[in-house]
Structure formats: C-alpha cells, structure tokens
Image (tube, rainbow, N blue to C red; front, top):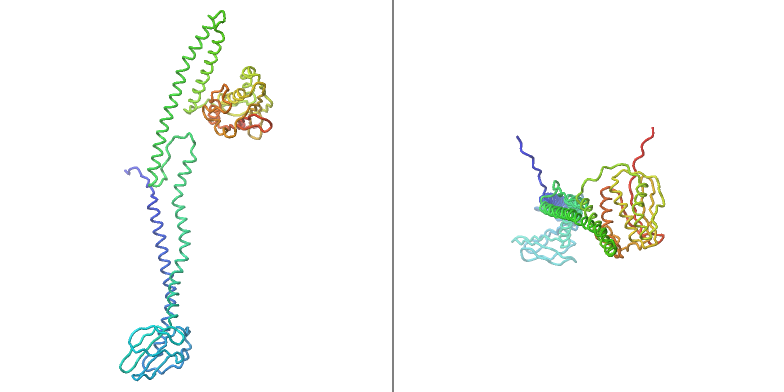
Length: 451
C-alpha cells in the first residue's frame, strides 16, 4: 500500500539556476556557432587567395608582370595579395609578383616591419646560398583581417545580450510570480482573518518566512481570544453589581421621603445608567469580535425600522430640544437580521442626537435607488474634522468636541454589525450646511414573481 504522497516543494534557487544555466548555455552555443560561421567565411576567402598565389609562384613558374593579370578568373581583392620577390645569389631579380611595388631586399633571415612604396609592410625573408626569397604583406590588410575577425566574433554577442536580458527578465518574472501570488494572497486577506497562510504553492526558501507569519498569527489569535474573553467576562461581572447598585438607589429614593437626597440620587442614577450602557456595549462588541452567528435573516421593512428607531429615541431628542423626524419613507424591504439593523440605526441616530446642539434637527430618510436602499441620517451638529474622519469607527475614539455624553463605542458597534450583515456604512460632511450625513446602504430583497 502506497504511503501518502508528499508534494514536492519548489526551490527558487534551483529553478533560477536551471533557467540561467540553460540561458547561458544557449547564448554560448549560439554565439560560438555564429562566430565560427562568420570567421570561417572570412578565413576561407583569405586562404583561397593564398592557395592561388602559391600555385602561381611554385617551382620555376615564369614571372608574372602584374598581380591578377594571369588568373583574372579568380575573384579577389588585389590588396590581399602577397608581394613575392626572388633574387639570385648576386642580388639580381629573378621573379617578382608586382614590379610596381619595390620593397628593398633584406639581408637577414626572419620577420621585419618596414616602410616602402608609401605603405607599411610585414616582411619575411629567407636567404639561401643560391637565392633570396622575400614575401611581404601590407600591415593594413593584417589589421583589417584582425578587425573583421573581432567584429564578427563580437557581433553575435552584441545581438544576443539584449535578447538574453529580455529572456532573463521573463525568467525572473516567471520565478517571482509565485511570490507575487503569495503577497497578493496575504494583502487580500481580511483584517479579521486569523487562519494560517497556506503553503501549498510557496517556494521552499519562503516556507520558513510563511511559517513565522503563521506562528505570529497563532499568537495574535490567542491574544485576541484572551482579550475577547476578558471583555466578555468583565462585562458580565460588572452587570451584576451595577444592577445591585440600581436596586439600592431605588430603595434609597423610596426611603428618602423628604427629598433631601433627590439630586444626589439622580446624579448617581445617571452615572449607573451610563456605566450600564457602557458595559452593555462592551459585551455587544465582545460578541461581535467572537464572530457569534447572528440571528436568522428574514424580511425587514426598512421604513418601519426607521420609524421604530425614531420612536425609541424621541424622548432623548426631546430632552435635548432636538427636532427628530423622518423626511422620506420609500417602500423598501431587505433580507437580514433585524437585531443587527436595529443596533446600527439606533447607534447612528443616537450619535446624531447626542452631538447636535440644542435646537438642532436630525432628519432620517429611507430612499430606494435601483436594487439598493439608502437610510440617511442628517444632523445639524458640528460634524467631524477631515483629519479625524478615518478614525471615527475606532473604539473609544470621540471626535471633537469631546464634552458630549457618548462613550466612543457607538460607531464601532455599528460598523461591526454592518460588517456582519454585509451592508455599507459611510460618514460624510453635509454639503448644504454644517452637519454630518451617516448613510447605510443595503440591498433590496428580490421581488417575488407574480403569477
């Protein structure tokens, strides 16, 4: 029975080595082959000319009066011809390939560089007892041959280098594609995601790094879980003494028949209410952080939801002399959890009432546009400074002015509920007058087909 298959991990180093080795080998073979073919043609022409001249002057061949006149059928460059001179023992000319070129006879055997006939020559002289043979070649011809050979050897390299750079760029892109996919997978993860980063298609060299990220995520997950448990447990524990304090206040108020402690009891009761509200909000946030499943979705009438929210917060608005009302009620039904939508709308409207100065207005409107419904809450408060707008959904953050009654958790709770319901929640300054516009955008429920 075969054991479990182990997926082979790819290595960036091995992949890069194989690709680059193949590229360099291909470049070397192409360059060597092209240079060989080019230089072979040049050398072939030069050697053919040498064969021709050897045939002309071998043995006792008669002197040739001018280069190329006898064998004009052979195409060649006259400048490539050797100048061949032969003298007898007493120095009389016996043979000369080109009488028009007079190169002085050298007395010593061997090679020499001389200037004659308005040119520089490379000369080889062979002195024997019965004759002297001297073969000369223009230096410019030798330099031209060397330059052509070097150019033809370098030309393939010059052409292959840009092609190799393009190929190398493609190879690097191909190698780095997996790293790019890994980076995209990490950056596209939800901020609340704490599951490990998969390592299925991760190169072997990057696995330790990804494993370190997963270890860090595990530690962070454990830390957040402990924090959520602490907040939840603390909120639960605080609710009991706060409830007991409220009972004691009610008992004291009942016993305070002459009303001597009425004002102090009212202040204490207000503090207990604020503390109880804060504890309830902390508990609610802890539940959202724990990703507890929400209530079962069902049809929700958004217009009725807005009316109910206004009814619940009318006493608060009245105590602050705020004109709270609804300005538009389009028929709109969505599918969602009523409890979460109530939490969102309650927090938005309560926030608007708390931050609007006495005598101001808070208007709620339910509007339908296409397949979406918008619930807008417009207030006439001071609004939020532009530099503070990115932080409004942070916990315990309170925009200026900070002398209001809010706890800094309302918008954070509304945002958490909106994320769980998959709806959009935005804040923006009003354009017609000072104030803030909170907007909740939800998708409408599909209409049932009529029979």
